Length: 318
Ligand code: BDR
Ligand code: CA
Image 1: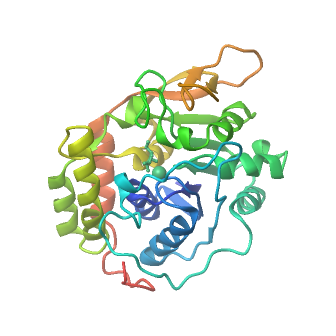
Image 2: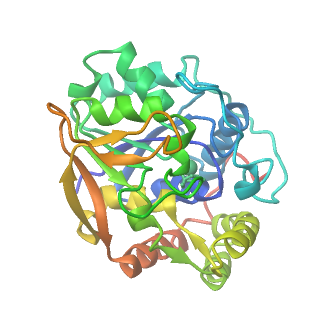
């Protein structure tokens, strides 16, 4: 089977690291590049962390640096209390040897859509600013990509940063509105399903023994993320938001979807809330509303346990 070409737009971030490493090692995926965005950390740190993840895997793929602020609203505080000051929990900061691509993220997205016309799946797992800028940059972008799988939003689950809003949409609601209103095939993997997927400290400890380099790194990074979930959600484990979005691209049989146009509330108390759009002329989004949580969890752990730890990467600093 030909692997699916995927570009991940990311704000690494602990669960972003899980998603990127998963995508690097699932044989059903060809990861063609990463673009960075603020959200969990600043864009500068996100770019550095994305480069480090790529370096760690040994993949030779580009990383393009993204926007540093939302389209319209003032920048909000990054989610350091969820992911740590440097993005990977308490794992110390490190300097990758690789450098970002010469073009900014939105141009890089358009370039990759041209290069892989009709084949590329965009998978934003952070705020949607880069995708919105890419739509502005190339008015034919929507017709060139195969589909878009967004980690973000919440239809009936409520929010995780306010009672109404999920973090990625809340960080740039105007960008999200542009993405949900464009004429392309969007799947929304939001809190309605990602809140069902929980991996425990024992799952990550087992991963660390099976795969000391990659599993060990994720286990180290996850400790801070576990603390946050214990304090805020009262669970002993963590939500697997971003890996769930990536897994849904190549294992859609684990997910059930409702089809509805989606809109985003742009002001007031409900800013950043995703809703069933009632107006005319907007394409349906496939909104994930049901999930085989155990299948997703097992798929993540199986692929990560098979990560080629013996593979020599360019760097062992992570
Ligand atoms: C989303 O917000 C970030 O904290 C996570 O990385 C994920 O993309 C979940 O709301
Ligand atoms: Ca993320």
